[in-house]
Amino acid sequence: MDLRTLENFSSTFKNTKRLPVLFTSHGNPMDMLSDTSLFRVLKQQGEDIGNNYELNAVLIISAHWNTKGTFVNISEFPDTIYDFYGFPEEFYKVKYNAPGSPVLANEVAGLSEAINPTTEWGFDHGSWPILRHLFPSEDVPVVQMSMDYDRSPLYHYELAGQLKKLRERGILIIGSGSIVHNLQLAMKRIMARDLTPFGWDIEFEDWVMKKLDERDFKSLINYKDSKLGYLAAPTPDHYVPMLYSLGVVDKNEPIVSIHKNMFAGFSDRSFRVG
Image (tube, rainbow, N blue to C red; front, side, top):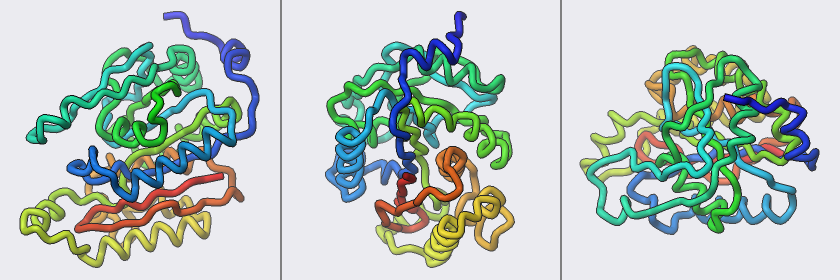
């Protein structure tokens, strides 16, 4: 495969005002087609970024593309993926038809030997539900990158650092996951039709936000050493996308919460950098 050089990439995506960074929840799966407060906030964010920045493309890291090794989708037109089961029929009819960007995807692959190009996968339910509200016109190219599931949080944070220069080329980097995501405990309460937070979920989210305010990214990387880390994020898939968002942040950039909601072991907290 002919990987373009960064010089060629720079000629395609010119220097622009540095793009912000988003970390966002993708919400309760059963609300994917609903008009929720989270999706209204994302619509506002998309409009603001589209109106005030020269946006060339999106690079998204979703909680729902976990692989052995790290991959980036180089497809010209990625598929919409329904990586869930047992949902109402209308959930399987949604299409998000934004184009990919083989040029950007190949450049992402060229930024680190750890990142491999692939045509597998597409827009999963960690990406298309938020993208359809951020950019409903479906005209912004989107590239999705996977997470190497067996790697350490520090590995993901440091890999993200190699992507930072993309912000200067009009690329919006999005981590899509959840600060708190304990599916096993949450389902027991949800089955009982009780969405009341447990208490420890609120406590852990508050701890994360405090560390963000303090710019103590080291503690966030080592979240498993915290009092509630294993309880709030027993698997890394939803927490790690936040580390990708933080890995491209400069030390003194503002980090602003844009949405807050907690229900029974799930956090919808989302924030914007820059």
